[in-house]
Length: 453
Image (cartoon, rainbow, N blue to C red; front, side, top):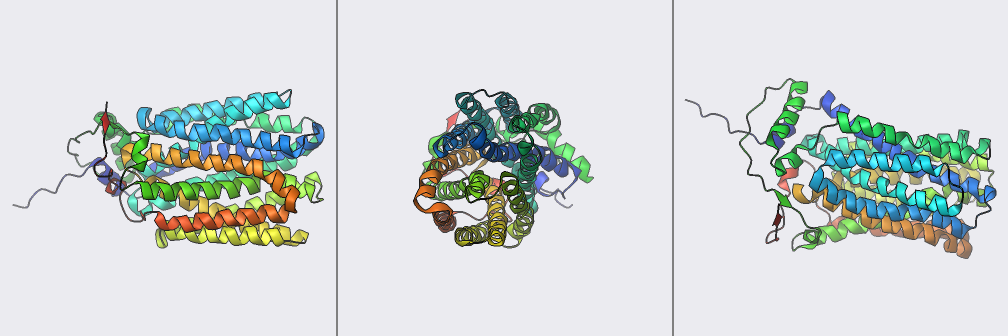
């Protein structure tokens, strides 16, 4: 008599499935929230350019407006990751959409720079927590053989949101003195979408098992199996770890090297990306472009993000996450360096598109790689902590642009971004490669103390 096939864990059952409509619903459902996040981040760059004239703001005051949001994002990313490992990915995702959606709508009513700063901080708190949580949720459902591609597809929604922001900036902001207020009012949409997320998206199976909620975990797996037409295979009762990861485990023996490398990449890419794209419309205006022309150029440059994501989505499964990330960071460095030397309108447009293509492809690869660095109990905490550390660079970039601009103009600003891209590219050599591996292949570091509860 043939021996019965070995039972599969729920994670293995998910990994064996083809990509189905349920995966599509998860990616699109999470991606819409991601796009709304990007739209909100992008809108502030156009609002800043408008407020320069309306409120007669200095570059220092503009740096406050841009940086305070990243202060909130740094705190939000860290807290969001910790909460997601404790109360669930879906719960935190919905909560973050509600927070930054309501705060964005309230920001449209800002009566002073002080009020705008308060609202921008609250917006950042929600924005920062959402991104690592959403990518963790998608990565924990995606089959191993296409996990990187699906996470890059999720990250591609960032370009959709930034294009929406550029369209709103181009069509709405310059039309009246209250155009920037109407733009922020449109950014309140995530508050409504939070209800859809809370009701429509599944909770992470790995998280449910970790908390001993096996009936819910089984129901979630069967939902995906039904969509694939695959009969369920009973899973053995897991031995729930019911462990609560501690942030200190990120720096335990066996993990600290990859944490240091990951944080360095996040720091470098955040400094260069947010420094460049948050200030781009304002820098173009400072270089003599009209407000409308500046916004139009920014829109065209932003459109180059979409093919960047498409190429990265192909390469993360063809080359692997780490080589794709390294190559796209080097390409970003070349784009930033060429932009620094651009001396004509056509050169600004072309080099800006090169930077946009490679930089957003690098972001896609980074989000595909990050959840694969840590085991389940530490995954959202690790992703959130890396993102939170990266937001510190976002803050620093906003504060550094004005003095760099005064010292050497746009050329020096983008030469500095080139250096940060190169540092991030070098740090990728310390990261693991997760292509073709299941998420459960990542184990906690040996000898790590574990707290339970």
